[in-house]
Structures are given as C-alpha cells and as structure tokens.
Length: 358
Image 1 (cartoon, rainbow, N blue to C red):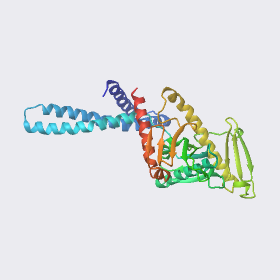
Image 2 (tube, one colour):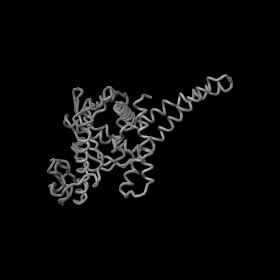
Image 3 (cartoon, rainbow, N blue to C red):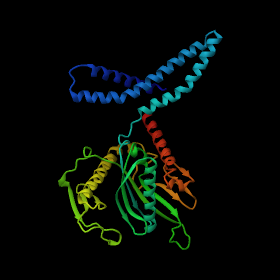
Image 4 (cartoon, helix red, strand yellow):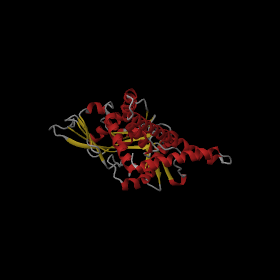
C-alpha cells in the first residue's frame, strides 16, 4: 500500500480508539453519547478490516523470514504459508479500500419510479408502457413490492406517464442508475413501409423521502381537487377525488387520481412531492462532486440519453459504460436487467475508489 493510505488507516484506527475511550468516560449527555456511538459503529468494520489486513501482512513477513532459514521442512511450510497470504492480501486490501469509499446514504431507501413518454407520439407511449412493465417484472424477481401510484393511458396500450412506489431492501441502490432518457429503435406496428423509427421515454428514480426528511409548509402548497377522468375523458367516478398539488416555491406539480378517495390521493401526492423535493436537494448536494469529477456512469439527469433498445438487432446498449447485450427480450422481461445494473454499479464503485485515492 502507498504511504498516504497507510497514514489514513492509522488516523482511522486512532480515532476509533479515542471514541472508545470517550464513550467509557462519565459525564456524557445522551445526545453526545449517541453521536459518538454512531461514529464508533461506522468505524468499527473499517478498523476490523485494517486489523485483518495488518495481521496478514505481519504473518507474511514472519513466513518470509522463516522461509529464509536452513530447516528444509520449516522452509517448505513457510513458503506455502507465504504463498497463501500473498493470494489473500489483495482481497483484504481491496476490502479496506472499499470501506473508505463514501457511501450513498440513500442506497437503502425505497424508491419512487416515474416513466414518461418522450418524443415519438404513440410509439413513445407504447415504449414507456413496456419500460414500466419491465421494472414491474424486475421488482417481482427481486421480491420487492411494486405499488402503482398513477397511470395516464393513451387508449391503445401506451402510457403517457406512470408512477409507482418500489419497496424492498436496497431498492434505490439497484434502480438509481436507471434515471435518464431511454431510446428505442424499431419498426412500429402501424408502420406500413417497414421503416425503423426512433422514439424515447424518460425514467426518473427518486429515493422515497419521509416526513422527517422534508418539511413542507402548508402555505407553500396550492391544492386543487376535481373529478378523475380516464382515457378520452371517460368518467372514472362522480366525486371530486382527483388532487393536484402545486409547490409554490419550486413550481413542482403532482397529480394523483387513481384512488376513489380524495384523502388517499392527497396522501400519495404529498409522498411523491416530498420525494421530488428530496431529489432536488440531493442533486444540489451532489453538484459540487459532479463539478469536480464528471461521472462516467452519469448524474441521472433526465435529459441525459442513457440507453438504447434496438429491437431489429436484438441489442441493448448502455452509453455510459459502452455495454452492449444481445439479449433484448430478457432485458425487457427483467431477467437480464441485473447484468446492466451490475456493470453500472461496478463502474460507479471504480470511480468512487479512484476519487477516494486522489
């Protein structure tokens, strides 16, 4: 390991010991103890990894020293032990380096998923519906709960927009790189000449925010209620149950009309609004890092083209990491989506490691 990393590891080990001593002292207030306890628990796995690495390094030094001796039997045993340790050390060092990489505090959150039809008319809406169902199938494969929030249909099987809450372990960590523009290239069923068309849909994945994360002042909201309507203006019900909430400071607008209860629609709209506001704060928080280092994986900007689905060639290409899979059917059923997400996660981890080493 390089000297800078060794110094960093020494600092962390010292800090861990200092916190342990401070926690053992008397006179700490409850809040002070809680703060120290949190930092101690966060440092503990890192320090355990450092201890394992340094013990392995010490063991290898001892084995090398023993292998330099005159006893043939001991020399053979020592060389075998040294070889085993040489094979283990890179993995132990990588684990320590990984533990130093700043973690995304939102990774374990649930997510709000929104898919909207982009350029391409009816074909874009059909593709948006297929993408939404792809994520629905993927959630089922992961044993996640996929709860519909709102769907605006076109009447021919397409979605103008659709939203859902995805609940489960590590949902946001798996879905966060899906945000952006998804492009489709294929021959629409309505195309008589057989020409390939290009359409697009926009995906937004936001960490679900709780009330404790985002405080919304009632005076900052304008709430309108009206009657829900389906495709073509067909009445869904005869009460003013649909809710439109406008957040006046930001201009964000959320509409919910799927539930027959105005109260439920309002609660769902507020949940989506909180998550959108939290995502805005998250983007501001990350902007400094993004300015310093342009992410290869991407910022998740909704205007950024992230992936192309080429049906005639049966391929899916993620442009951020130049990954192409010739298994579009399995991607669209959610079965092969993990291959794309794993590659994106690995690229992001590599970037974080490189940034931590700078």
